Image 1 (spheres, rainbow, N blue to C red):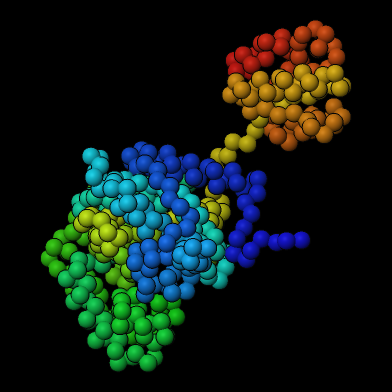
Image 2 (cartoon, helix red, strand yellow; image 1 turned 90 degrees about the vertical axis):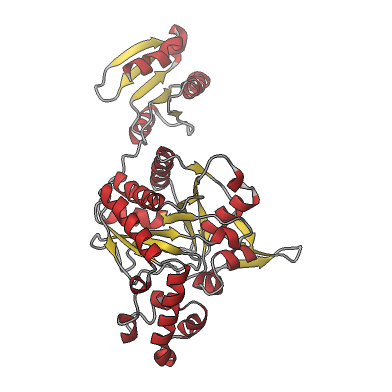
Amino acid sequence: MIRLPRGTQDILPGDSEKWQYVEQVFVDLCRRYNYQEIRTPIFEHTELFERGVGDTTDIVQKEMYTFTDRGDRSLTLRPEGTASVVRAFVQNKLFGSNQQPQKLFYNGPMFRYERPQQGRMRQFVQLGIEALGSKDPAIDAEVISLAINFYQSLGLKSLRLVINTLGDKESREQHRQALVNHFHPYREELCQDCQLRLDKNPMRVLDCKKDKEHPAMQTAPKILDYLTPEAKDYFEKVTAYLDAVGVEYVIDSNLVRGLDYYNHTAFEIMSAASGFGSITTLSGGGRYNGLVEDLGGPETAGIGFALSVERLLMALEAEDVELPLEQSLDAYVVAIGEKAEAKAFEITQTLRTNGLKADKDYLKKKIKAQFKAADRNQAAYVIVIGENELTNGQVSIKTMTTGEQENIAFDQIVSYIKQKG
């Protein structure tokens, strides 16, 4: 027997409906915020992620699925969505559209080679949004509020929003030097990754999982102490907008997003539900004012976030949230005898083409077993057709909730069920 690759999963009926539901809620919410869908390839040129995500990140250094195609080109299965969306924004000249900012959302599988664990797969699904073309701090607050609104609309209550600012270029340069000076005496005590980060991107030392308990982490310089007046004012405006719409948050000066392109606003949404697990992050995002230029486009501000559907479903389970899934049928057609089979098939198809959910037996089951199948499918009505019904040009329709039965002409079946509703 051939098994699926490690770190992947089959999403079977019974679970797939949950995925469909949360994805549709996300789509509907994005449309209310006037975001439009964008779809990008599952694989891209490797250079896109090296430049767009950052060659000092764990994603690029350790986690990408990269291969060489027959044309000797290096390609990579996308590990995240932002770089691809920005590449599409630049390549298709969306910056020239008369609709600005460009507000986009996406939904699709991503791939990272890491140790599989609960809620963290090698193939996982991200829902995300990107708003490109505005430097207004109000859109930062809009992006954050959309994320919070999404989780709350699904019924989650144990949410914790953590925000920080990574400052502007001048703020980061001053903070960078302070971090280098601070960690240099402890260099040999840090992991190999952090020793490299100290040279290339010292802010990412603060994001290290291996060295997080090192005493030097607790006393590291805070970015909030190195903000320029402009960067401080920007962050204060973002928090003021969040306050205005009642979004609660906690400021954490140690919050550092794991990708190189972030600046100014950064945020994560976590689950505080008991039993959720040690990795509490549900989603994260932030502003990336230099990414479009890095990928060959004009100076363009951007902000976005991404969330894992797998971790979302874990959070719903941890809080015992039951999604209102619609899995019942409008009608189940029971055929008695071979002569009625063709008409049963025709009626079933007519119901479907008229917008009703319908099914029938395809295993030649006995009448009792067909009624049991109707029960399993939670059919509102059972339509029975046998030789007598064929002769009379009618079917017997049973309302399953009341047990009421009526004889209805073939051409009245659809209108009868719709009127009964």
